[in-house]
Image (cartoon, rainbow, N blue to C red; front, side, top):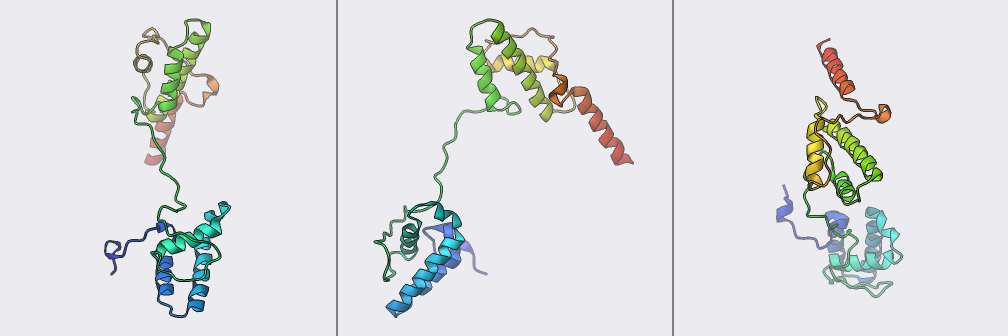
Length: 202
């Protein structure tokens, strides 16, 4: 059995090892005309293996560039373009940059935490009071999505205050009532879990 760890490294992995082997085969062809024909066929295969390359305006030129990279610049053929064998030329997407900031309460998510921070910076008034109540409802919905057995409004209120750095304060004991059309109610969740247990027993 041949293991990847023992195989020769491929500069561009987008096309797979079979295409790489075809390139190595083409390098061994002595007749230049035949070698060029095989190279053109390989470029067509590369376009089929990675159809998304066609999104680039100059994708044919880049395919020939990639062919030369796979050949290590050692494929002597007639090319329709002036080609390069720079290994940095590739179609692979760039790595996305992710925020290093941790989410304090993952069951609420980063967006809700940012909303809390935004509301906590608002001036006191009716608009802020309404938004605080709506945020509390949103937190409760997310809380129920993670913990369907029970929900403690005081826990949600405390965590909301912590995320806001103490700038949002809702009195302990306040009941967070979800709208009837929210689709999630604590009692409904408990009833569904009980019904599932009954069905399993039957």
